[in-house]
Image (cartoon, rainbow, N blue to C red):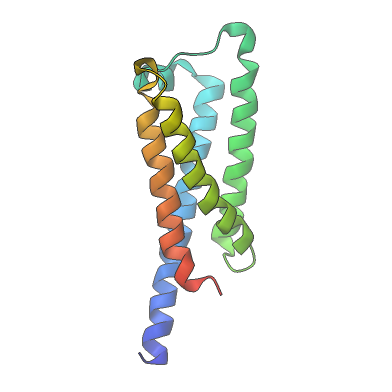
Length: 137
């Protein structure tokens, strides 16, 4: 493979990795925003129970954490070499998130709405891994 071809392939993978990180950030920010302003909407769409009103602060904490995660994703998308540790954590975290959400969905039919979230986390984790692994050094 020529140097020119190899450079073009690395550039293409880097561009796709950055796009997947931005998509992950937007996904997390979207859920964070919904948890703050309209928590009933994702609960209705995914047929998931909401915590009781006196425990709604858990949604607020999750929204803050998702927002922080999205900000880190955007840093990694901006400079993937400098923030490669964030990309590695994103891969591991998304894949582990997919496993945990799937395990939770198996707990009962009232949690079946977690399957799309498990699939999304797994898809993001696999996309980040496939696009980052060949260009990580």
